Image (cartoon, rainbow, N blue to C red; front, side):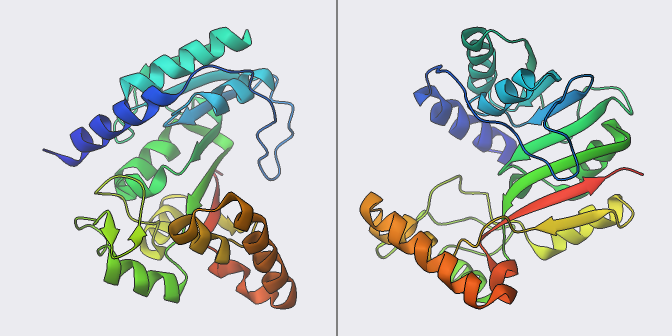
Length: 250
């Protein structure tokens, strides 16, 4: 089975669990006003449909796509439930069916590490208007400790990813691997150097709770340890397991 087919099968099942609810909160993008009125936005790999609804509530003409038919049903049902309009369709990130220079804003969560950035990155650039912004919330392979453990326990980039090693259990597909520095470099080249990495939070010790203890009671404690650590040693922020990728088309 090809990678795209495995991803589709996984997420068709995964997103079946989601039921529509009243979506609250806003999408925040550096340098971009939270009022999206007059903007055309694209939500990549829309999943539950929540972010597409947020963009629409913030005033954007909102489009969304996903490789999963279930995710598209979610996006449409969430939009109807919340009283907004979202134009959603099944689509492959590597072959977007939108015109050139079409979107003011492109947004996604935990999707870049699933795709071939050398191909999809060019599609992002193509459909983004000059002056437009693309912003993705991602994981990261930059931390040398996490990188070593990940590759030892679960597998290397581009290879089969084990689901479990001893008492460590990961979530996600058998193909996904955290976004690498090489992939970020590829995107930076496509955007002619106009790429900035952010770390909105330091996520390291809390990851231990997520992978091992899985305790809601301990979550606050480990988050506190993360906050204390980065407060004492700010230079460690870039080694968070999470990162945000900001790209602008000049």
